[in-house]
Image 1 (cartoon, rainbow, N blue to C red):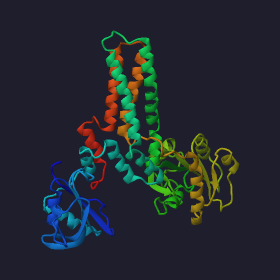
Image 2: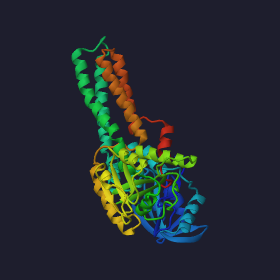
Image 3: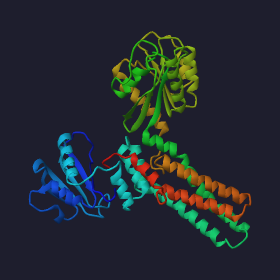
Image 4: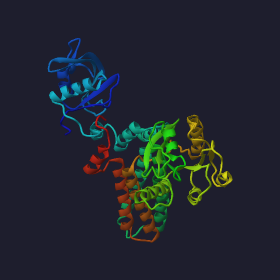
Length: 453
């Protein structure tokens, strides 16, 4: 596939003012020249790199659109190959027609992420930076964008390279002692002294993964409560559209309903759940079990209580479950006569809000309270975070091998037993950075990318 010239819409398949079609490969300029004609009559093959020309695009000798062609010559391009980017009007139909004309002239569709994959294979970027591209594209807030740029700009990569170089230095120290039957006690202590900070750095990277995941994907926020307390109304209020069905019939929501929202720079992955209660209905019971599972795995909880009815056993159970969780207790329906003992809630949960969710004007109050609480959960997005599960698995394996090397040293085992662990840790670090990675893993990495990237 690397020998073929690929072409794809880089701006997505939606209407806009401008569309960009990216062409990359050995024949990128020759193929584009068959489709694009400059107004000045200059051929694309005679144009220098980093030069844009105005002209028209054609299909079967019939003009499709006015356009601009931007030339990048290898290796000074995103992919490291010859690249042409054609800027045309952003209608879906005309953009597809330009792309089809390129296919007719010899280009082929790329696989997911193939432009970035070619950039990696051609040495334009490391694998970790390539993976950060997807995080930059999918960033939904300031923190997630900062974290993605931390990887893209190499701060995390430099940390990992520092760990690798330290391990290589230790391995070299072992190699220098390989003719001896055993290492001296002084050498053993020196190696332990060098391995401990490596272990701590790897432990920090592994431990920070979940916090980094929250930055990338947002706080997983479970909306919980008994039936008919206003959970679905809350969901609709925050998403600003009718995402959940609202009725006065108990048990309407029987499965989890998910939606991402952004309040200022805070991203919440909202999960509306079934009302928690004892039920003999098999389907509703599954929904209740899912609700309880979501509550346990959530980073943040919005627990809704109905102030117009007295506490029930399920309300007390929910209230008790909020201890040691980041949560807001929302006391709803305050426009109705109050039958609930609010002191039980306010004395149990640090953050409470009395509100009527049926009032649209309460949205700003609700969002303000959420921001106030989430500020206590603020994460420094400038820390070093691993980007994905693949990187986490490699870092965990490296950490396990460093820990095992230290254990073998403490147990006084043979030099070879320690050396093997160090070598395995180096191999896992190289796998993390992409210096030593199987083709099947590489295909999996780029399969998650969009087609035009």
